[in-house]
Length: 335
Image (cartoon, rainbow, N blue to C red; front, top):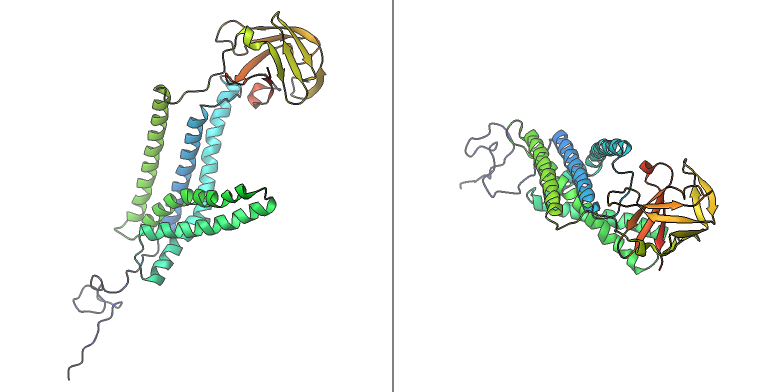
């Protein structure tokens, strides 16, 4: 009687046909996920997250050009502020990328591997995405419940759950997929070549986004915000600050202030003003502060004012303290 034995795999001397040490035949048993590569997984995840943060900021800046924004544009302080903002963004993105990669991306890659081992499935991108989706849903449920416990105003607040889940998937899925690729074994240095591809791909994506945004504004598909161009007739009427203060502009060039807040050069509040004076629009479209008020003995009401808002809802404003701070005292036309 002939006894047949089933080969087992996992010993020594790989590659000999029929030898237990050789790789199992194709289709024999579950495909075990790769292991190791934690350094590459962590680094690639951090780089991918940093690129995501910078890309989100770039999209936000490009989109924000469509809306009113003031902050002392054109001055030396604005230039330094812009440079500082970019440096701060780079530092914050790097720190956040390292933290989130260690706390979320690396554990997600290991969790995907564990699920693959337990279920006998291959460690595939689809399984990684499913892992990210399940974990994101659980985190959204936990975080959303804590948020709602702090104050629940109605059924609309329940949208916090899908919004959080979707946001977590959008943030974690690309970085986790890139990190998973770095964790797969391959030729010497293959793990770190993934890092180069992710970095170059990210820089390319940033460049394409910047060029696409510039092209959209250049072609007129999107329009950079411009303040409304008001005539003297448009100015006539009552403008209020929403807190009891108002300016009443008359067609004869007089203006009456009632309860208008005054601010000192330091930005501190210096009381209210209830006086009459004069007003006029400065000539020329290049005037940075086109509205001139002349109200004696009222701090902040005798210098140039800016015009903002939209054609349908224009505003007038004065800077509070230094323009670089971006703080403004705003009144809206009510007529």
